[in-house]
Length: 145
Image 1: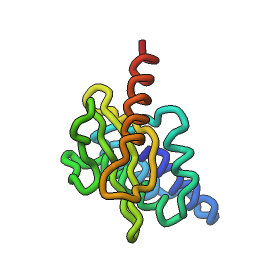
Image 2 (image 1 turned 180 degrees about the vertical axis):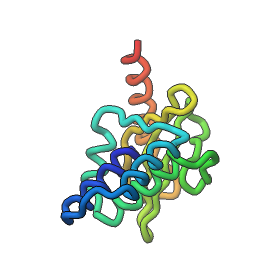
Image 3 (image 1 turned 180 degrees about the horizontal axis):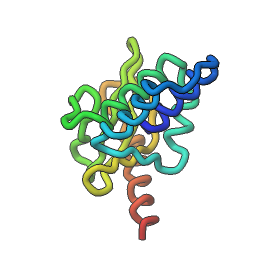
Image 4 (image 1 turned 120 degrees about the horizontal axis):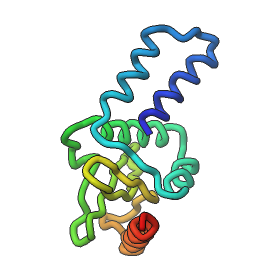
C-alpha cells in the first residue's frame, strides 16, 4: 500500500509536468525500504470501503496505513487487537467526530491482511461486523490451502 501511495505521489507530481528528480526517486526508494510490514488487501473489501469515503477521510486512511507499515510499535490509537476474537485487529481512523474501523489480521509475522471497513456509530464494535471479519479471515486461510 505504501508503494501505491508513493507511486500516487510520483504520478501526481508528473501530472504537474515536473520532471523526475533524484530527490523524488530517493523518496520513492525510502518509501519501499522503511516498511516493517506489508499490507495485503483481501478481495475488494477495502477498496469498496475506501472508494466511498470523502477525500479528507481517504488521506487519513492512507496516513494510518503508512504508520502501520513503517512503525516498529504501532500506537493503540491506530491499531488494536480485538479481544475475544481469533487474532483480529482493527485499524482505527478518526476524522473529526467520525470514527472508522478497518479489520485486519496477520499472515506470518509481517503481512497484515486488510479486510472490510465501516464507519463506527456506537461505542462498541457491532458483533455483525466482527462476525463478517471472522468469516473473511476463515475464507482467506481456506483459500491458501
